[in-house]
Image 1 (cartoon, rainbow, N blue to C red):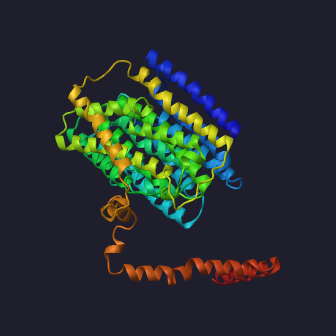
Image 2 (cartoon, rainbow, N blue to C red; image 1 turned 135 degrees about the horizontal axis):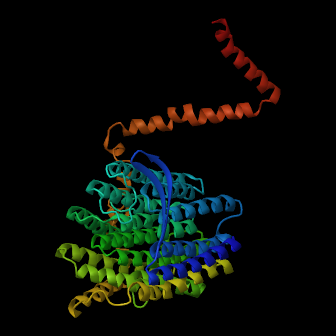
Image 3 (cartoon, rainbow, N blue to C red; image 1 turned 90 degrees about the horizontal axis):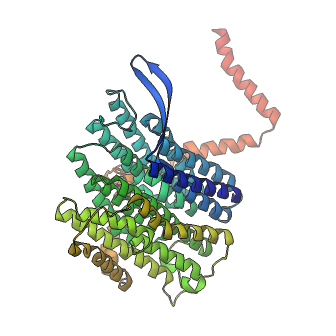
Length: 544
């Protein structure tokens, strides 16, 4: 894993230089292969490498390098071969999706992401992982069906390339937008991302922060070229609802990884909102910076969970004394998440909030978006206090000092600090917006309010916990997604009893008992039984 980590890091730095060259020279590399022709219709496999695709691939490889280094200790030796194989298949699928310029060719990477992410979530092979993997694969299958429907609508034009194509129908773009919601876990498909936290933390650092959940955003950046006002209204409305609901839920959540997952929901929704404003470069800029600091935050959480063996943030105690280096990196990544100057998240998030204040949306939507920014600061500060605050009832935690895990975290945290400023110089060399001072001060005011709320509240009062019960299930989205009608019918109890009694005994248990019986038989006995069975089948056929 160490050698592969160095190879991925080298490839990431080379691709970063290539992307800068493409950006400065306004160049791109376009390859098209004719696979099949039928009368006037042709099917081409198109590969496009411009500054955007190469920079995104560079970011994916950079994060993969750190995760391979981190997983060298985190993943057990028995799980390493399966983990490494599936992880490489996932990265290859992500690269195919990024480089494709043809929606049919893109479907190959899209399906590969869904299947490999299902295997990665199920890597522990227990009941919790099975439940999480099921809701993940079902949500992704819905997206696959929507993509296939959108492809069927494109047969009218006969062109499946989405570069320099302005002839997609409104229905096709609507279907692609809904499909991207399934990958990016936007409402009404938000329930699968918190459930997918059953996966190992290195997998969450790659799959659930910087690749799978951003695939939908990237596809929309490439294809969302419609002028239909209805599509922009739907996208902006669902994005604002998602970022507000996920921010509320994160302020009541106690599971360390689920808090980070809900923050991912909120930030992905902000990217979707910027796309509805037609600010594609700003959305892509925030996609890159978010991928860097969110994967670092997941790695910090993974190191913490690896050391203490549980995920409940209320049980963690005095991390500042046990591991000051880890506490510092956790604080830095949370500051980047809040958008404090001059972290990497500040440059992109400030552009998003300024674009929102300069937009033509109504006051209510703007207020919800600003409140969501304050909620981000609130749950980030709450997370820091819950992890580092001294609790008299608990003993001090003991942390393992592992060089490979710490090296991976420190490498990523350096990127989280400096790469945001570097990318802002290249992607936005001049200020794109000039905001009045009064509006400009609204942003730090909301963030300061969130910081005060997160640092002063104890979050232990009965009123607080009773109000937040619905938020813990993403306002019942988890229940609706997993079992939409079962709990509403009178037959649910009977169905449950049948499933746990007769169905289980006649299927799983019966098969297991038969296997046990046959495993005790000798080879000669098995051959005799097979011969008797074959004669019983062939004798009536011969007589006929």
